[in-house]
Image 1 (tube, rainbow, N blue to C red):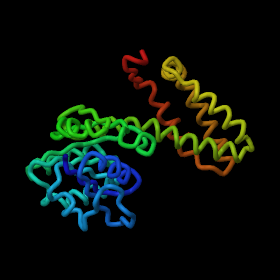
Image 2 (image 1 turned 45 degrees about the vertical axis):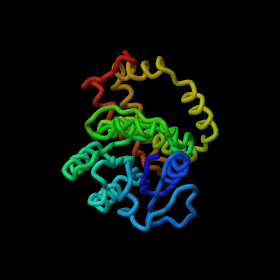
Image 3 (image 1 turned 30 degrees about the vertical axis):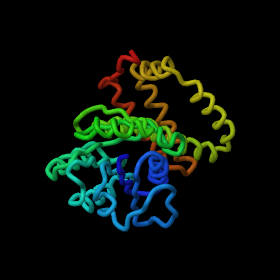
Amino acid sequence: MPRIAVLGLGEAGRIYAVDLAKKADVVGFDPAWSGEPDGFSVAPTAAEAVRESDIILVLTSGPIAVRVFDDVAESVPADAIFADLSSSSPTQKLALSRRAADLGFRFADVALLAPVPRARLATPAQASGTGAADIAAILAPLGMEIEAVGEIAGQAAARKLLRSIVTKGVTALLIEGMRTAQSLELLDWFSDHIDETLTHLDTAFLRRLLEGTSSHSERRVHEMLATVEMIEATGGRPFMAEATMKVLETASEGIPRGKRFR
């Protein structure tokens, strides 16, 4: 039974601690923790939590993940795997991996590819770094859906952040669209229309978006300029509309397709 330290007991951290504790010895730590542990123990410090652990899972924000590393680095056992599950940049993950190598322990950059509350421990994840293959081999039998994708830390983070460009971008677009529709008293119509549009997305539709932009980028730039003017007229702030216009202005530089969209 592996000993796993979970550093960061927010929503995702608590879920991982509870689910992993059903099949492993789990110890958690969070300076803001005030709840009752469910199947796992809680250490008085982060250093104490990692001292005898086989795997350290860090489920914090990116900036805090660096501080956590600094706090526990000298206490990580030589044969342990330090796994950073934060949404940090590939550059930050690679830098931490190099520091881990200098200190003599393995590092895994782990990217969670879906919201944790929905699938809990079975949330799809990818791992890269010197400890990626080993952490996948240890955690998969415990119920974690984790795939090793490379030995260089940052490769998993890059995949997650590429996904975020679209998923978080769509969220921001929806917010800007809903606010503008509300100002124009078209919120119900817009909600229904955008739901129908997005519900029926498929590969052919996405391909047409890319092909149409290649052929009609100038017209689409003018359309977004009109959109910017409309949003400003309502007193809104056209952050996403302006950004969309700027990206469309670069269409003449070429639009990579990938084999799926050719």
